[in-house]
Length: 151
Ligand SMILES: [Fe+2]
Ligand SMILES: [Fe+2]
Image (tube, rainbow, N blue to C red):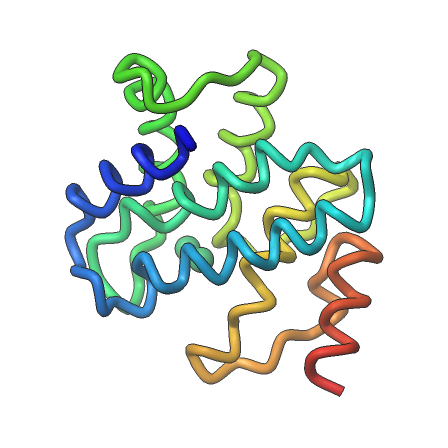
């Protein structure tokens, strides 16, 4: 699978190391959440959600406040394309870019695919001591998983 190559590349260039709270272990959990959400609704672009899971935190440079890491991740997409590590349409790229750039802002999205990306990430807030709140979830699918998992 092409995404393994992508994940390997991102891990090799990740500044915080394998054990980071925002590192590969987290990416894998967001990926599993993203797959679960995408399977619940065929209108969600699962390719974008999978790519988001691996890319969104890959440019973090510290474990606390790094407000620009989403933008850096978004900006890295073109480079990853050039390296042949991902192939997406321009529509998918637009969604992936936006989802990465704004994933840190606590917003919700009315776009199903972008919302699915953010919900997949927020389901993992427990790891940093935050109880995920349904008010900050975008999709019904994400809210359903949240309710099943934490209630
Ligand atoms: Fe992040
Ligand atoms: Fe994350």
